[in-house]
Length: 404
Image (tube, rainbow, N blue to C red; front, side, top):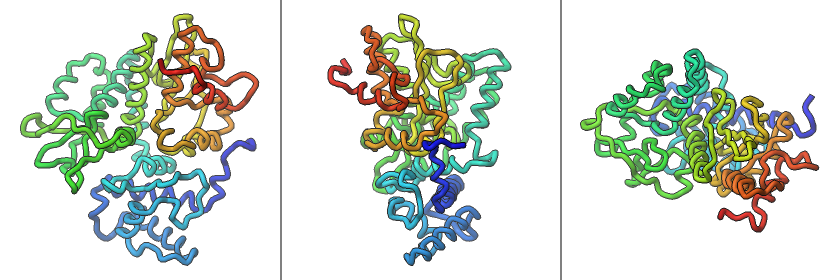
């Protein structure tokens, strides 16, 4: 039976299923073409979303969207808080949209709500690919092959014909090589400007050209740092075919993986040994301190703290460790200052002892432990004398706990 802290009341709000339907419709339309161009008959999921939104509006005596293009205009121009929907207060944040206002692409929030309702083999594509790579590496008794595969998805979301020839010589990828042809697909012409593709210099995914001459990066962290910086310019006449990872892998593997690798780099700068994706991805990072203490870290780069809290679970117990926590990139909390509190309100009962720290707080705690500190500020597990997973967060930012 759920405890008093179990966030089951989300299902008491009548329009939670509708929000999932809306998100699914937007993602499906984006996957089959442009959100600006489609014709009758509409995709069944899109028609279902339109019908249900119209009904919700009529019940509230509000003028409804009159067509699918009009509904998508709502998704792009109306924050969710302005929709006439019965949703829990933590289901969205201020100024949250389902479609990005600048690019016309589904937002990460939209993808995360779509993921809540994924119940078919097609919609679980990213999980199927990762599990297949794991099994192939296990069968070959080569855990380093799985790590190489995961790192490839993080560091090479775009491949040219020349790149494919290069990775063909990587022996670590041999057990999972059969997967590579399946997960990389030809980049659509919509990413081209003047016949060439341009990759983001920060996250390495393809940039989307905007009508005003600018560029849009699909990764939230890049956009939080300002205009997209142009990286590799890929002319098919020079580099051959340009392929990119399928969208679910870019969204749910490459994006979070960038946060994991960036944290790995920060910890390496402290001269700490870091094992990535140990035990065939039991968790994300395994950190070993000079005194033998081991920390286990799961990184969660997710836009919606409420949805993140609802899927909170203890870090797997093997490979063994002394302390464990979840980590979210600092920029998520800067963008939404109540991020940790919303996570706490919606955290599942089974994860009662789980702390959520920012990557900056995690690095500060690691520095404190390296200095010989054994107080709460040098710990990432639950603090003694409390069952709250957040009491230590303010300690991590206490006076004297600088980044130096």
